[in-house]
Image (cartoon, rainbow, N blue to C red; front, side, top):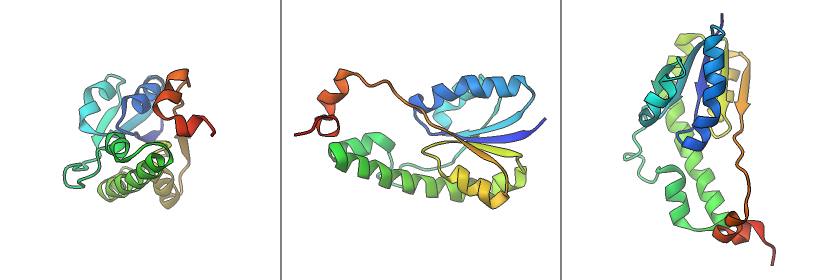
Length: 154
């Protein structure tokens, strides 16, 4: 079978939606390496894949506490810009830590969460296929209370 790399985002909402897919790929005989933050290791390993840590020191990067830090900065559209900024920094740190390791593994394809755009970048560098997963949440009325400027017009 094939060898694949999955680059996940260290948030429950991004991981849990991929576990069924990852488990099925492993059951089909795919050799799968799943990169994420070590706090999610046991959850990911239950699928039967091999866990790999991004080895990103969030303390060293200072402001990188992912969405929580961005949300503390502000609300609404400024919050989205802050999250994008943090995501870029986070991706670059992860890329530096894992790119050579992935090259050495010689995967047949890469799966990556939409927030881990480095998956496409690495796949292009290795000239292998890549597929992005895009988790979606169900909108409800409560969201408009937390971020009214995103959902309601004036």
